[in-house]
Length: 67
Length: 322
Image: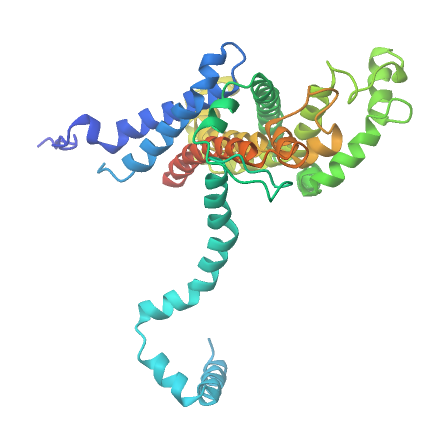
């Protein structure tokens, strides 16, 4: 008898699941840090704080989501 | 624990219990375990609130004002987000962030390469490897203030050993270049010192990663006749990668807020070529006395470090799960 090793599908929508949302938040933080330190365009530098802050706040919130 | 020592401890506990005044003892007996736990950790929490949380909240509040610490009698005006707006459009601060980026990126690249290579070599367990490990670890045990000061002497064009070594290998006269005084060389001078000091730390983390790889994987690879090169790319590097990431993130956060060593070595000069973010912050706060403005800058740096720390904790958890 073969055993089904796949995990049961979560009933939570994708934007309320911890794993994918953590990745999005991490990418936002990394993007914000890149924007803060890049030498190419001052507009990117101007919006760096908002991006990093959004990523950080999002990270704090999504770590409370179910797996 | 032996019966004798257990009896001795019980006697000591009885002695302490007898010395406790009766009203206090009665009050303590009425406390729940949870309340006692809070009682024990409350001094630490109070200390944390006083030296971490309170200054943070105060800095956030100051960042919305035009407060100047050298003019305490001037009326403090609430200027909203204007400090943040000015900083995020200030080209001087932008240049400081670029100097920080140069420092952070190059130190991370060099430290990771050198640290991992050293860890890979030390992991071979050759004769005397313990001695060499101790020797390699020495720089990271020194104080950054000491390192900054003695590298200033090493970089001296007349008497400095560094210039003589460069001269020996390249033939350039030692007094013809000043590492900390040249616009082109100064950013590299701080990168060299930080790499010299912190590569051993990266080596230590990478060594922990290499030692955690089970031997049976290499034995299986030997059976499959995998070449050493193939073993490195398919076993060593992927399994050591979480540890390397951990070292990269930790060094990235540390170097982002680097102050002491750079301040002692170049003081941000010549001009502002080595003026990293923390040096700019110090100048704004304690030379130009723009307290509100520098508070806003500190908060921007704090948000960045806090964001990076979140990624660091995530990487740390991934390493723990292995």
